[in-house]
Image 1 (cartoon, rainbow, N blue to C red):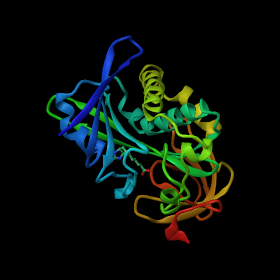
Image 2: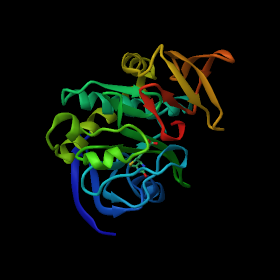
Image 3: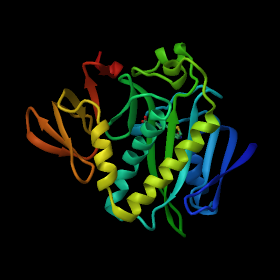
Length: 266
Ligand code: BTN
């Protein structure tokens, strides 16, 4: 496996951790899951090209070699309460949103794991758990459309955008990555130390489609129409379902909103 170069990043406790950059991998999440037992916490695997990038619900994550940012971060789960694991994806989405605000954009978080700009997807997050004999780790994978072409974005399954498209200039992916890692690691630290409350309040302010009519699909692909009312304290979604009344949703996804529709609904 060719490693192009290693970069170093300073953690909040002032120690260094390493970013391994590869020319080509099947998937940074798959690679990190396979090698987690041999790597220290906070290791980052960045690939210029993924040949089998994965999204949630066995979807494919399409990307353009050298143009977008696809990486995975190894998170220690030992100091995180089990019930807070489900919130990692959300704090990652919030971190991406915060990083994008630094570029003057106004992102929103589409519960639980997508980041939108101008109502179009700019980033997706896939958090998985990797267990070896020695330990249990979180593998947090992020795909961010950085310098993607308009043609590529127009051919995706969802309305999508990129930093290049929104800002009208190219961005340096290494800068994005460093800024983003700093934010994520700090927010993860807050999650471990104090729980979800602080992050929850910030996500709540950026939540897409709140009080709007949506269609939600659960993991069994059953669909429900209704309105998002709020983000609960534990990060589940409070939903006013037309058929079932007020319910909390803890998995699945928002599949339809009149400005944001998966092609399968068209
Ligand atoms: C989604 O939108 O469903 C989540 C997409 C996550 C994509 C990232 S790219 C880096 C990491 N490696 C993968 O194979 N997937 C994640």
